[in-house]
Length: 531
Ligand SMILES: [Zn+2]
Image (cartoon, rainbow, N blue to C red):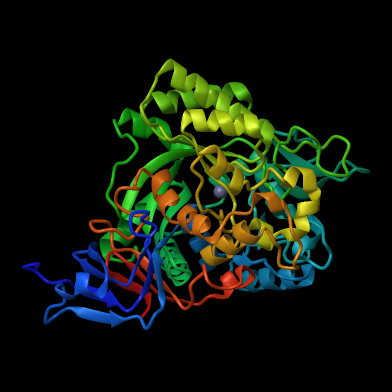
């Protein structure tokens, strides 16, 4: 009999705990932000005191809160506040959205757009400078593909960036050119955009960043997410996270992958990975080694389907990867490198092997972000290293029209959740939003069915069970941030993070998992959505 009472008790629930010693329960008690008891109605009844909030779930399903281990959290929150939403069905509609931003922006100031996706427009093509010049010649314009990695600028933007037909392609990037005239067409690939994004365009104001934080926390809580790994955090964003935390706006737990240029200062200040607390923590250091799957710039060992010699774009040479991995590993950080193509993953795995050999660490858990196209050799070496993969979970469902660029043979080894499980490599739930939609239930459906929104199957051999997908989206995400002892399952002593669903994902037609309503999301015992 406890001498204290719970803050909240949940009963009459179908609790899927993700704790293998007790997979299901019907009641739980929460106290001071943690689970105080989990079990039958009887196990929990003693925790109900006069002030305890008792929630009768009427048989609804309760799961540990979902964890997205690679998502662009604050950056996309800020875009939702200040940029045009270019996820539109036609180029004319995109121009219309951009014009709305132009109308409220003084001449000479940047207008930005995000979530443009060429294959989802009726025209099925990229944006070019002429499309954007038609929107404004008085405002520099920068539109991002929803995958990032490829950008589109108008003539004024290109001029301010100093890009002209004489400009050589920078290392790790490319400027799109008209094949006949050699003139720049406004498309900017990979690292060629860095001086614009991180030098030319002013950083958003602190107020916009704070509004972005509130916006994205609300959106993600509504989808059942309680923890996220922000996949590239800049100095200004880290400041915003700290302000939001202090002021009570941070309704998600955030594990920050800090952007590589901040690494030397952290190292020199004696910081190592893990600093912070269970709400806001410095995790790994993020770098990008190749292109994106959705823009077909991932660097592959064999060319894209239907092309003779397009292997994608390598953003970092092997020497640079080796050198940086060595210094981050030596300084005690978790290294998190974006690598999609098999050739790139091979370079990153080799760099991890060299670093671990030179300076052995007991459990570095270096990560391969996305880790999209694998093979048995890579999987075995990742297992030996204890490396973690964070593959895209909503791509097969959402980006079906892009799958033919890769072809069925390659898709047998892409977004390879089944293979990660079979080889004993820990892989997480992750969406990379904005590139993929962030809804965890869509991710779970996609990994379980490998079926796109039109009903086509891609890489069927990589299917996982619903139970496996739930574990990937909870406990595995916690593991990727060294937090499996404090979250990722519903167990006594762990953080009281959970989501209440209208139906049991293990009991419905797998092709309808994404339609299950999220009823309530609880973080640290506090309801942050619904209820
Ligand atoms: Zn990313």
